[in-house]
Amino acid sequence: MKKVLLHICCGVCAFACINYLKEKGFYVEGFFYNPNISPHEEYLKRRDAANDVCGITSIKLNEGKYNSRDWDNICSVYRNEPEGGKRCNFCYDFRLAETFRVTIASGFDSFATTLSISPHKKSKIISDVGMAIAPEYFMAIDFKKNDGFKKTIALAKTYNIYRQNYCGCAYSIG
Image (cartoon, rainbow, N blue to C red; front, side, top):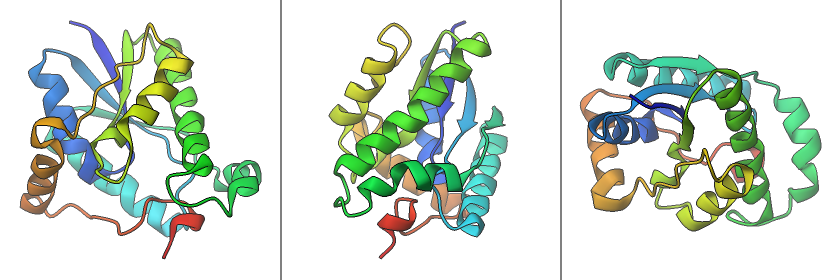
């Protein structure tokens, strides 16, 4: 059975992605790496929601280092970029590069991300970023296909999982 490390941005988005991968016969572990999330209280809510979903779906959740200050210092050059612009592309690359590093260090066969399930994100851009990092390891899956987003929202409602109202970084609030 092939082992997949799934980058998880939040609990809501994780549900359908985990189920999809498990239905395809993969062993899945989650990786919550989101130093972009601000403020820290929001990070904790999303991490706890991801923990809840991983418990419900019976997978292990690994947590990456949270250092929003480093992320803010690096990303601040993109503060005036519109949502969906260069800042977001940088953010995808930042998080997926770390996911790939953990994939290799932990002996996984491949990695994927829940980011593609959001109707607010362009799956092609996310896939291009992942493929540029590691084409032999990245699973370019558009999880929103076949009602993936609708399914994940329904599961989140069923289990009363916290759902945020902005992407994550301080620049995306409001």
